[in-house]
Amino acid sequence: MKECIIPALAGFLTGILSAWGIGGGTLLLLVMTLFLGVDQLTAQGINLLYFLPTAAMALVQHRKNGLLDRPLLRSAIPWGVPAAALGAWAATAVDVEILKKPFGVFLLAAGVYTVFQKGE
Image (cartoon, rainbow, N blue to C red):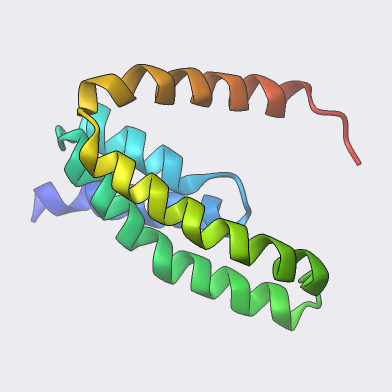
C-alpha cells in the first residue's frame, strides 16, 4: 500500500498543475524518472496516457468558460497532429540517451523563459 502513495500523490498534484497550465506532465515525467526509478521510455508512455484525461478535462472547462480561441485551434490542429505523430515516432525510434540532454536543455530554457516572461 505504501508504494502506491507517492505515485498517487505525484499524479494528483501534477494533475492540478496541468489543469492550471503549468506543465504538470513534465513534472510528472521528472518525478517518475528521478525519484521513482521508472525508465525514460516507460515514463514517456505513462505521461502520454496521463495527458489524455487531464487534457480532456481542461478542454471541457476552457470551453465552458469561453476560453477557446476557435480560429487558433483551426490553424493549430492540422500542424499539431502530424507533429505529435512525428514526436511519438522519434521518442521510440531514437536512443533514450540521445534524447535526455536535449530534453534537459529544453526544460531549462522553458523554465528561464517562464521566469523572465513579462506579464500580459
